[in-house]
Image 1 (cartoon, one colour):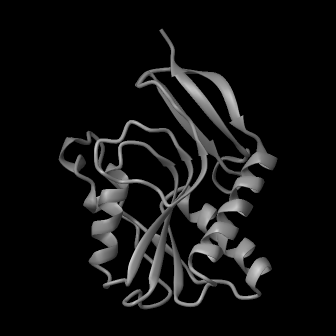
Image 2 (cartoon, one colour):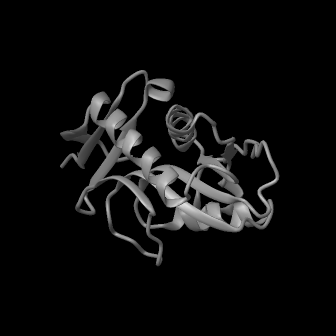
Length: 183
């Protein structure tokens, strides 16, 4: 496993809060409210981000959209190449997503392969009216024709860099860091 060195802090906790507040407003505006919206976080860091968006939306609209949890482990296109035994956790959708607007939520959009897997997983659980994508960071380098509807921050990166989102719930820290492979 390569070692990384921290290159720059892209967002601190206040920057993350502001970005998620803006995304929350954009979701409400684009969908003309929150009726029939379901936020679905992709494990791991997409889940707390989706929960924060739901809390923000409740403050804006007075109504909190349901939040689901999506595990895409078995939908990954690199599953057969992974050296470790993957841990499959349950997908938890609090409502039937058929006919709803599903907002998929993830921390970083990179090649688009995670989102492709998430789309397959969502479709296996129902037939939403539409699917939208919200990400905290879009770092470019797409390998599939996928783009986010809502983006906290666009960050051009090199292939030698990694964008690391650290959240209080999962990492006991709150920041977005760009890291580079140590030579």
